[in-house]
Image 1: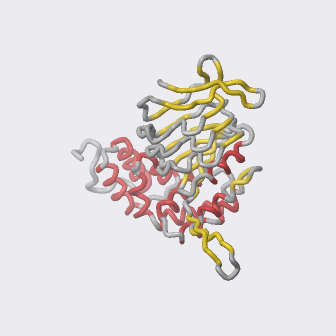
Image 2: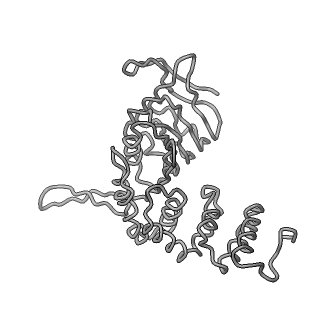
Image 3: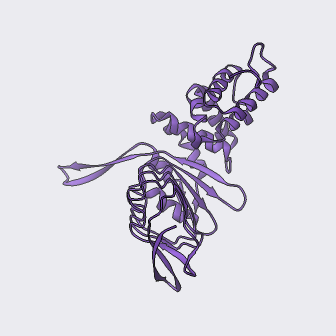
Length: 298
């Protein structure tokens, strides 16, 4: 792999600052060290539009700093993996990564400070997976839009925020996560007119139920049942791996839903998942007369 770097000192730590990457990888793991020194910084425009193939980047666990526009117009970047060793995350680092959808953040120390900085640097929908030492948590943060509106009478500008994504982000505090408040916002997410975001929120909370109250869980399950027709096609997308299994685990699939689910998994060649669905149907509703078996020609 072709990395460009220079030696720097951050506080009392001497290490390497990553200045650029000239490889062709789609999934890249930045090494922990270069030339015997730890990688402690990702410099300005270390990754740019020239790295148009990059889809996923994993940053080293000992990283201390990510500078402004570190990922400048990385158009293909969809996932970023990092840890809360980062103490300095500069504005604009991921702002121009318009296709970034997933972040995995390993929590050890001050992860929620970093989480706030990450979420504040993007107004697009983000799915953040918090990796704890015990029970992991995945939260979806919808997008939002902000506009400056001039008030000529008072000679001032007011900020108008549309969408519920900003309110969801406010549930992440420097001291932790306000999960009850997060769950209480679901009605706003549903009424925002983005069914995919609402589905992602509901499924993620059931899939990773850390801090989930019984009442909130019922709300999410009811939403999924009522909108199963829109949710099932989302289950077969690669980025939503595990959704269909969650629906079976929670027993949310009605007998009528099974035809649609089996048709979709068959259409996309998901043979193993088709088999799991057929076993689920048999256990929950009995064998349906005339249904195809795995030996049949799909």
